[in-house]
Length: 335
Figure 1: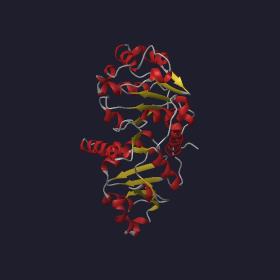
Figure 2: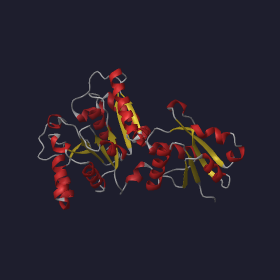
Figure 3: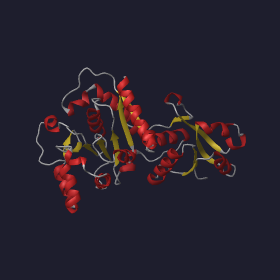
Figure 4: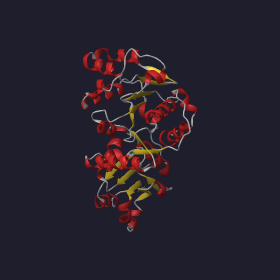
């Protein structure tokens, strides 16, 4: 039996490189995968080979569509479309989580990749970044309800980076240690880090969390490489499938952290000032060559909720949970 083989041809070099890196490192697809950003080189390859599927970007489709000989070289042709509403059986929306995109490709061509569960089991935890430049938009409430619901199936850790999180009042308890202390232990007493972490973590409805720093001044001086070391160390403990990062502008190296996330959720509102902030944020990312963050970002715009519960555990029974449930179905294959 001929080995299954998939070819990607995408003129978006950054997107193609990131996708190739993910597929190569995670070994998500159970078949050989080749990536091209130049349609002529891709055509040359296809003229000598028969493949299971060819996935092309919209701007390159015309070159392959007009070439009957090359069209016959692939059993399936799929299009990476730019707009969600253009999605159909042969067109896949490119700006979704990589796991969801590859799962959709596998379904379309009849192959099954690794599920989210066995991708993370026994390995490094995947990072889920939640960040928005828009204030007072339920970012923490969304992060907590998403985390609690995800924790019903996976092992999940939640980290909050707010300047004034209000966790002492929210959880109605005083904490003897917080994330700033954990960072100190990692930096100065790394051999005891795992033990310190185990003694410090708290839990709510199955979701583990480390109490946020009491003062943002305690973490605002943490350098980007120190954050990377911290998150990598947590991920390599082997205790979690996912780590949810409730991020703010106070974090040095914010964009690099978002780049390292497998999923990014940005909350917006359909009103002028919020949309202007989002547009400005996106312009900054492009200017600083962080377009790949935008490519894996899912924008969330909530309806107006009359009242949400103050207690985090009660969020599971709120209207916000209905929104989070939709995301879990689409991005994490919840049924």
